[in-house]
Length: 367
Image (cartoon, rainbow, N blue to C red; front, side):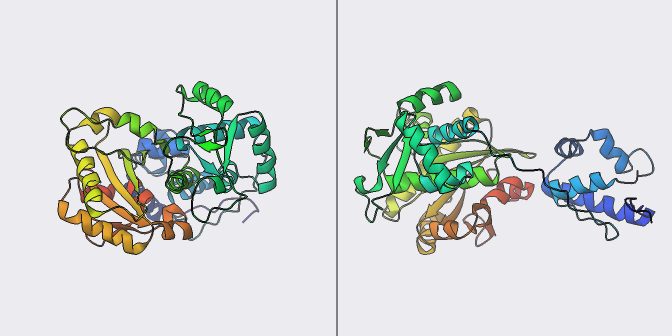
């Protein structure tokens, strides 16, 4: 065969490939239209390759490459693809980094230097220069961990938040003014630093792993502004964070609760009842346009995660609950963590795959 010429699939091989392609799309909840859009083709092109207008067209190497990369469709045994040479990586400009950092801090409130390094994909020395410049121009504020009354804090470690100039820039970027959490050299108000940084870590891992699918997210104080107790309500709770994915099956949300391990059973049960009451009232669906919501609890360790499950199980809430722990999140990417699902017994799934798979509908209307 001449070099560079594609080997043609036989009729049988084409039929097997088409069947594999259609099974993969169906399992992930894609229609021909949504799949074509994600592959960068018109829907008519997919129909030609799938034989909807007669005999199936011979799939090109580029078509099979995109199907493999976007959906994981296996290649026919007779086909091998040469790896595409990666384009030279150009580091983002400081303005791009600044916009990404301002948006993250406006939403998460606080971040450590390590979290900022991972967010911007830079080494520590580059981050140090960048952060020193932003701090000196009052774009950022910072406070030493040793001044936060947190046990075991590293005296040389800083925590960063938005400064006066950063707050003004974030207001122009997002259309709202975030609440300052650092003023001068002190944290403002009642900030539970480890709790806030834990929520920020969850948001960072989700954003890095699923930047193209995570459509929106918010944390305190934005959630506090959204979840206000109504008159006559006996229960009230606000999520520590709220995440949204726009997937083929519809917009999906996750309500995140970060537990330190010191909360009593009654308080946890009140939170679960309040979340369920808020959902049953229809307020969540009216505000965010989706019924697809589940509550995710993150505990300090596996033992406490199972205790949370034991506390919430007898409530028989309408909302689905998922459980994990900080140790597991530290050791693996967040999308690889094992989540213990309450309403489906000991079934295990991941937060992200549960959000992206249509099969989750079988767990209930809010799955």
